[in-house]
Image 1 (cartoon, one colour):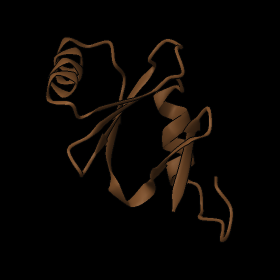
Image 2 (image 1 turned 90 degrees about the vertical axis):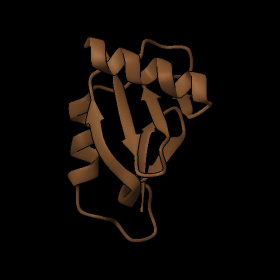
Image 3 (image 1 turned 30 degrees about the vertical axis):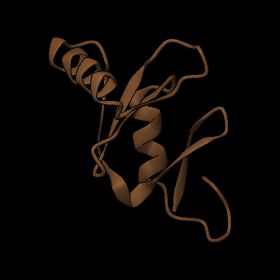
Image 4 (image 1 turned 60 degrees about the horizontal axis):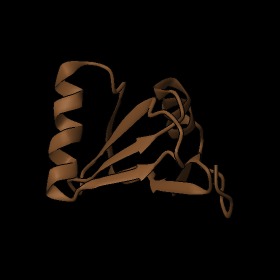
Amino acid sequence: MLVNIGHESSIERNLVVCVLPPGSAPNKRMREAAAKEGNLIDATAGRQTRSLVVMSTGHLVASFLQPDTIRARLDAPEKQGCLN
């Protein structure tokens, strides 16, 4: 099931490991490492990064939505045939 993370970008709900704020030093290092390795997916559409989504595939997705917003969308019941 896909979950909308803003600007027509979606992620697979079952592949999400965790959703983090980008401000702490460890999270900044994680983002830099992912960018260096080519595993950073920027879904911010040029806006400020407000959350980092860690995927089980090893990718890190940057989103402009707040972590709480993404967590709420991940926790919402699945709707058949529709994007959340």
